[in-house]
View (cartoon, rainbow, N blue to C red):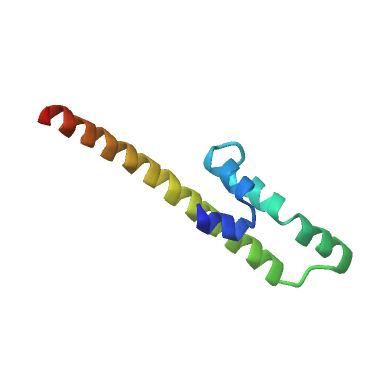
Length: 89
């Protein structure tokens, strides 16, 4: 979660992505509102702004995927732990 929040610069957007309220592309779009405004006023730096956006999407998607995969594995661990506790009793 921390990795995605640092890249998006917003814990709220990160939690929205993780809870499937918005997708990664929408979160990146919202986090780049100021950048888009500045691009509209002053123009785009060729390659730089596009590369930054692509990197941000990749990093946020990686953070979200890592969180999704760890949520699933913790559920499995909890189920196995509860079965072991039942068998021990």
